[in-house]
Each structure stands twice: as C-alpha cells, then as structure tokens.
Length: 110
Length: 121
Image 1: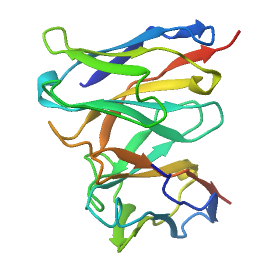
Image 2: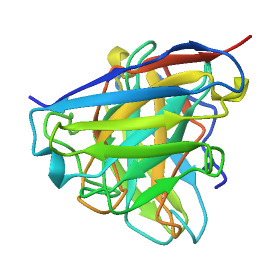
Image 3: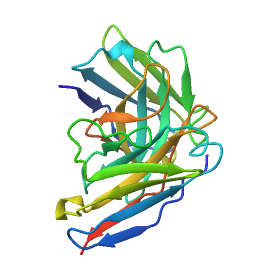
C-alpha cells in the first residue's frame, strides 16, 4: 500500500491556473476511475472536491476539475483565489479493495 | 444535514487499548460504507479501515491489521474502531467519514471533525 505520488508544493498567482498531479500504478489509479481529491485547510477536516476522476460534488466551485491519463490523475484549479490555499490530497481505490492516499500537495497562492 | 461526531479519543500508554465511536445522523446510515482515516501530527492522510453497509465486509490498512477492529451498529447509527496494542506510531487525529457507496470504498464525504488519539508513556 504505497502512497500515491504528489508534488510537495505547487504555487500560482491569483487568477492563474495550476495543476496538481497524482501518480499511482496499474493497481490503483490506472485500474479504476475511482480517483478523488480532498482539500484541507489548517486545523480543519478534509473536504471532498472531486470524485470518480472528474465529478464535482454539489457546492464545489466549477473552478475545480479533475482528469486522468493512465496511472496519473490531475486536479486543476482555474482562476486561483486566496481561499484555495490549502493542502490537497488525492486518493484511489485499489485492486485490494482498499484505498490509498497521496502524500499531499501544499498549494500556495502568491 | 449529514453529521458525523467522533468520540472516545484521548491519551493512552503504549500497548494499551482505546475504542473510538462515530455517531451518524442526517442520512440512511445502513446504506453506506463507513471509514476511518487518520492523520499523524504534521503528516498526510492515511486510510485506516472501512466497513460495508451491512458490516459483512471489513478492510484494514496493513499498518493496523490484526490490532484494530472496525464494527457498526445500524440500529444505533454508530460505527466503532477498537484499537489494541497501540504504539506511538498510532498517534493521530482520527476522522470518521461516510462513503459514496454501499459496498465500494471509493470516496469520502463528509468527514467528522476528527478526534485526537495520543499514545505516550
């Protein structure tokens, strides 16, 4: 159950678009369309932002979008805003019927 | 409104045991997978354990297998995590989360506020 690989940090200026990558294997990310993304502000519980690769829950801004190619999933935040500064985690269902998370990416709004 | 409220955390000595509970409301509890996820201080999220809607199937991370037991009481809308043989590496905030399916561990929404478990002598 090795963690999915995410960049430690990504930054961008307000209004810009950024992309956070999440690389797994053919046993997790590449095997299913069950990748999800979570936003976590300091001291708060995680919040679901994207599920099943590219679906947004009700109430999540359409500035957040997801995609997947092979063993790598991506989260794109367009029109970056100060409140988007947070930690972001990807997760994937695995062939073992379990879930694995990424190590997390700190998004900084410059 | 879906609400999840964890309880039972606290300070325990290495080798000790602790039982966490998660009280759920605002949704049909017996229709969804329930999950525990933990976060060590300053670290990332770690999936711990999940249980399917009827409780028939349970799943554990390798790091807790054989030490933790997940269970649920659909008549009381509660989920529990019995944690035995605790080590300092189990120190973390433990989150209870509702799944998106009755049997598949796919995504988690919402999450409880979390409860701190500290293992220390």
